[in-house]
Image 1 (tube, rainbow, N blue to C red):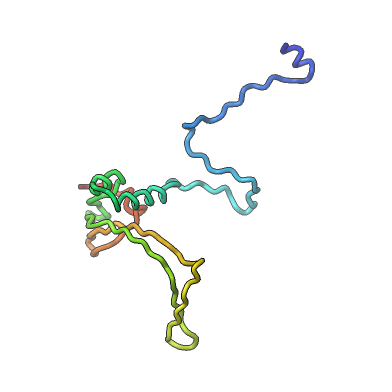
Image 2: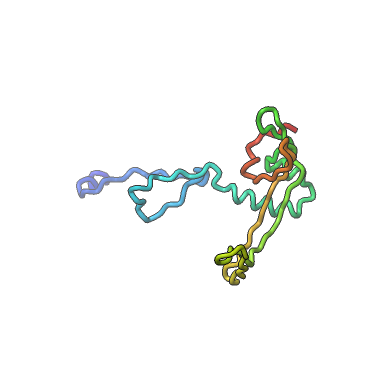
Length: 153
């Protein structure tokens, strides 16, 4: 059969290997050609950090064991910020904000002008901050800022 395939101009193709379900993260493909001035973009090291933070936000509100949740998320209770200076975790701040208005300087004066935001432009945001006592006072940090610090506790 192989001789007939070859004689007819057909070559038997070798099987093509495909990555399996455990091949790791692959960036999404796109059909557009990148512009010449734009080089290939590297993917961020923590491509799903925002998802981890969102899940922590949801879990923090309902957790019956917040200490274990903090340890699972690798949030340091005591961290060295350099020079032997330590910071200690005081609290986790979780908040929701809805922006429904804005202010801007008025024309030719020091008065401020209030502008209500149209319903289609109202912005919702969730904030997650880790509040620490540092040698410089009380400071709030994002999850991305503190998650790589080693826990000294």
